[in-house]
Length: 274
Image 1 (cartoon, helix red, strand yellow):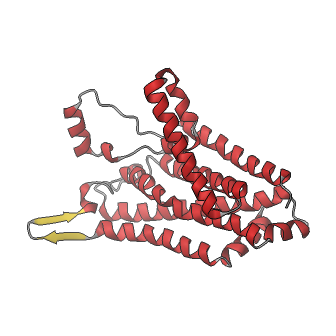
Image 2 (cartoon, rainbow, N blue to C red):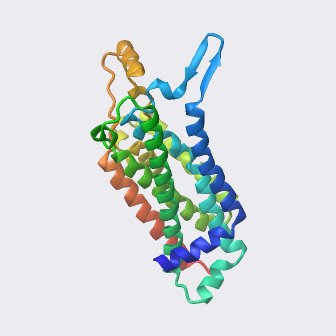
Image 3 (cartoon, rainbow, N blue to C red):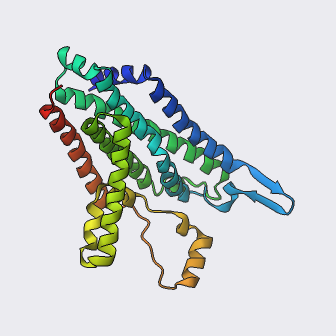
């Protein structure tokens, strides 16, 4: 597996677009951290985002996992562009001529997905830890290292999403079309959810099995979890309740979809005349 990863990393290093998008992606991580620590003082307005409780431990693990995951589209473009370049530069065919099997090719791509997801998760962990230690009102070790399941959920969410991008990249061969198909999947899921919500409510349990929905369910929105907003929500609706935990079922569903996307990518290559 390490040999296959090194092959894929070599391609990554020599892909200008992949490097630029990765720099933008991780640069946005740093920008968000810097922006959150800035104090805005305009006359009577004195505001600092970091002082609103969003960086308190353990809430920060949930908050950052949710909002930083939005930026994954940049790495998704990297995955798709690397996949499409295999066809345009004919490196896929050359790899197979040089003795790499189609399964090893998929393994090399998946190893890069694991690598990018791990690095992203590590950066998310480090940034969250630094921001939390700098601004949190609670710095006891037992509090800092609670709710760590969001880290695992963040990693699994990225792996699942990037595996879908790899599958689409192999399916349509062109990065622009692959991203278009990704948007189409999102639209189709939205239509299915609307249909279930308004026309087939007894089938509501089926929504959790949709791939993008399952990934979304891993880390639900954290805003209503803040004390001030939670109090306001309960005053408006005393029956307001929400589960903010990471559902084990969603983890298993995303892992199942990841396996389907990886195996599906392999089957596409098997049937395709390269």
